[in-house]
Image 1 (cartoon, rainbow, N blue to C red):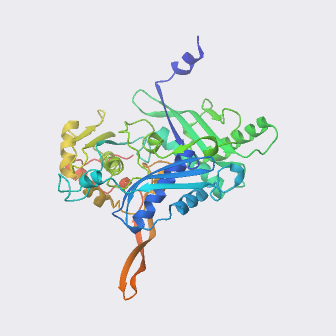
Image 2 (cartoon, one colour):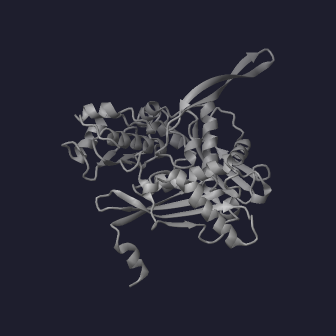
Length: 442
């Protein structure tokens, strides 16, 4: 009997998701794009940003459309972001201080601005920045209301980064680039049973002449140091497969080994393939782009629906036309897990009554006009913990003097909340609206 028959015969089904670290080339690009967005939002909350980044050996290219009153040092933002990630040595063949930075950025198209600026287009409201469909998803599978494979893949890589930066004595050979893939075995009813396979590729120093000895050491440290910190012991057993650096070595990595681009990890950013994706990336886009803001709102509604006990699993799709404020459609799928006597279509109709899905309303409700985006650009936009941050808002004041205009800069401390779409502040409202009295624990 072929080996693959033995692998699959005894399980109900397997599902796999992957994550990548902050040092992965595509994620470097995402973080630079969102760092640029944050720099604009800190000074000009109404700025329009669509910033794309390319990283390769010794080079960063910033391109896109930005309309803002903010004064932004794009080159310094790119270098600072790269430095914070950990590319700060020439041995990595890509480092913050020696790489070239090319900036080619112009203003937003006036044809797009016509539909987005309030009162200028066919729709008098602030219209959607583009057409498209966006998805939100939530389930009771993990405490994050996320699918287990992607949640565990993120946990593993976040902890690996923590060790690399803060507990270097434990795994001193770590370099920034890494990828993780988690396969979970499920019962027929959708319950996660166990972790079937973990694949982890982590870049490392060449700390021994024998590459096989290096491989054994890294695999042992992953098994004994890393995984026990983040994976519940009951989810792993003697049959769980652990594949660490399956090629044998991973010394060359980052942009020197692979070119990175903004927006190429949209499945990592969302639900690991468990839910559909509309195709629009998030990073580098201000919240008038519904690719980003409406996807956050869909997640917000789905998560609160599940937490309220209305269903155990929820998928939401919302669709827009460019320049038009109200969505053209809203779709809900509870996969037969609803605890209310309503069809999915009726649930969708009620959500349209409960939530204002115009872009301006989403931006206001979730307080998205703030520098909160850089943290989203690695380890997932969904399933994260909201935190209050303090930032400095810089306003330029022009004073007319006899000698001509003079600029003064007013610095003010502000606060904002990261990942506001992860808050569960609509649970009671939804329970009342759907007449749900029983509390279902996650």
